[in-house]
Length: 314
Image (cartoon, rainbow, N blue to C red):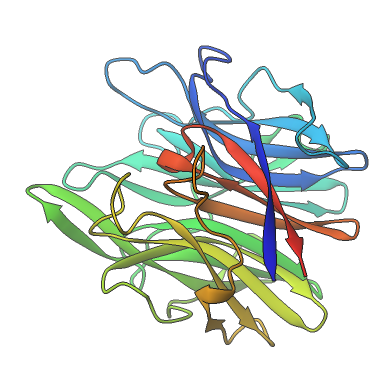
């Protein structure tokens, strides 16, 4: 399998005061005549305090580079003081459950000795993602005895009335320089009967490439009788722009959704020779659109310059 890059779709630079830069973790939601793509952006910084806000654009279902609409307000408000989503909201999965749309997101809050922690939140829409109400003040899933540090990059897959979730859990905070810590996290698995209460299996799905690796933002699609996962991974010790361990996209496959074989050589996509995704490629999300399979993803500097897409060539 090989991905054919189709180019950049959207750059959020200076659109609004609250949408000043970045368009991270593009998360598509398929509608009848369009694809609604949620993403995270950052406003003009105040007092050096960066936060992340979520909104969306609509693109043509047949020509995703054609933007039909840019939403003019954030889709969700940040949490209040002390809430798990006080400092950031990242979109991760949207599912249609009856007449409702479940919007699973990642909430961010700041820490003291380490920079942050993240948890799973849920908001619900009655109008196909135009407006949302938060399901609860607290997270659906956060730190636990077996997953003690943070959970992020949640992808939820509904099949045969059961909810399946793949996400990253951090098992270590690594001091990479004096008083500077980075999380070491790997993809794990959980199940649910209602999409709200989760049973966790806190075991990494597969081996790592780097000794200290962070892999996450899994996205899964079924093709014929197999399940295919694309995710991003990096070297915790050298992943900043210019480093050898920058984010790239990995690949794994499974026959039963539970046992996975990693083979990054089959990811089918890598850095471009120049341009917006020449230094980093990250945060993939794969969907079927008619007979096509599309991947939306970020490029350089964790999505600072927007997101684009690619089409799978079998």
